[in-house]
Amino acid sequence: MTEELNQQEQQNSQGILGNKQEEKQPEAKDNEQSEEKSKVENNTEKEKTENSEEEEIYGKPENYDFSNVELAQGMTLEPESTKEFSELAAKCNLSQKTADEFVKIGAKLVEKSVNNVFAQLQAEQIEQYKLATNTDPEIGGEKLNEALDIAELAYKEFATPKLKEFLRQAGLNYHNEVIKTFRNIGLKMKESSIFNADSPQGQNKTAAQILYGS
Image 1: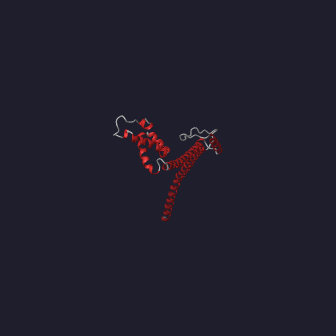
Image 2: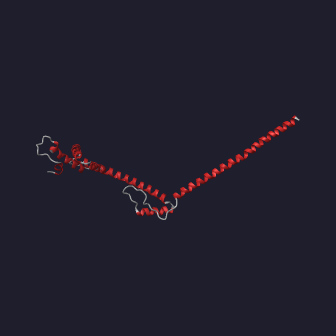
Image 3: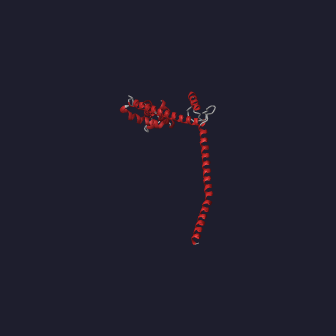
């Protein structure tokens, strides 16, 4: 009798556990369905994003128009090259937006190359100016330092900020003829009573007289 009761209790216990497990199964199934639904939704959103990106990259227009592309000051698109690129972009089925980006990159590369070439040419030109100045029979060699000191007097006195900037950017402040011009003005300044307090009254000269003669 006691053994039968124990067996019945074990069966009841197992039955309770079995029922509890069965009660949990629908909940687990719901979780699985929810996760699966979430995955599907995420994949759908991802596909939409990818499709949207592809639409921005591809899809050629009827005609390409690059008038809205911002270029560096003074730079324009060469018609023949633009036509060739438009044909290539059409073959690749590029959208207007994508083609614009390629034009921007190309323009920047051209601008950088041009600037590098210009800087190199200017550096070479300045070296030629320096050589001409150093070998100039009038102001070069041992006479150079003195000539520069005198030229500096006129340069500081008469050269406007814009003229100084122009000469600097062009490298002409190294040009022997420019230096000689300011040197000659400086010599006249030294001879003038503007820089000579002992000069007799009435012999003062204006800046125009110093530059162009009395």
